[in-house]
Image 1: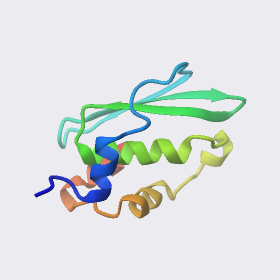
Image 2: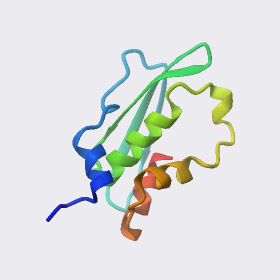
Image 3: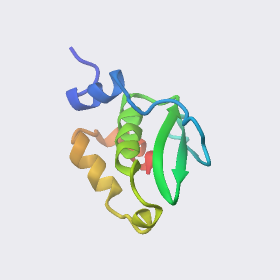
Image 4: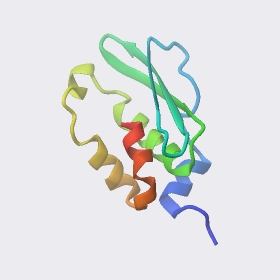
Length: 111
């Protein structure tokens, strides 16, 4: 029996963007009281472009997967491209598909 669905497990077991950026010039932190999870993103921005996005969390596999996808999405984007980007949650849903009702806060926390 697997603990996480396959797509979630893939990102949980081998996150590429976990940790801190080499040079963080932007930091974002969020937390939820639903499960006590905290999430911190560090960004390396050069010439108004995100060149590196990393995250740290004490959260579950669903949280790690959502943060990993978000880091993938925003890396390489110009800052202007992120303004009003309403479809981040949709992009995470499309990549991961399997988010149970009791784990929706993980996806929301990342965004």
